[in-house]
Length: 172
Image (cartoon, rainbow, N blue to C red; front, top):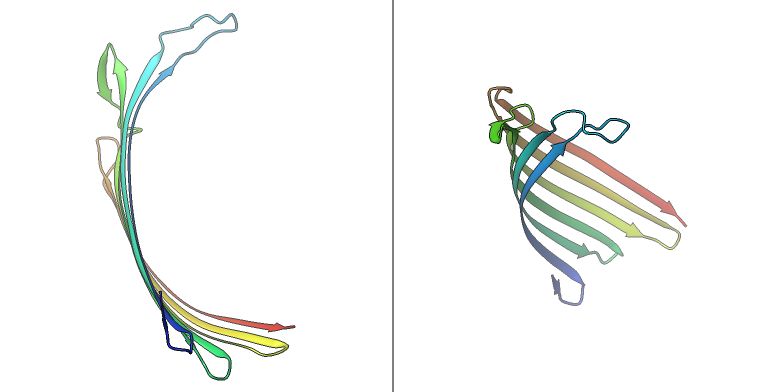
């Protein structure tokens, strides 16, 4: 953050990076008992390997300009990106051997990019204030589901454009 001169005008720059890695191994036993608490049949075992890797980055730049008449103009932009790789690798244990379970297993990659910009004007009076804002946002989402013998390859692509105005009036 940096302020300029006596006017109080300021420029703010924020940069964020987040890396999240997770590795989970599970063994899930499924047992069925009767009312006498006796095991009714052979139980089944499902194992899982669930690695996940998520990376998030964003940068934001804002400028506040104070006007001589008591008003303020704000402009800013933000760019953010997410990349995620998720694997759900499940296997059944059959006669002591691991057999892939394609019903529960999947491998999915996800990418998201958001670009946004805004301009805002506000002013306060003794018994009245107002704020007017225009914001533009563009979001691009890509997802890819790798196939296996049970599920087909799937591709997700979505582009979202958002434009909106915001008006706020306050009477004290």
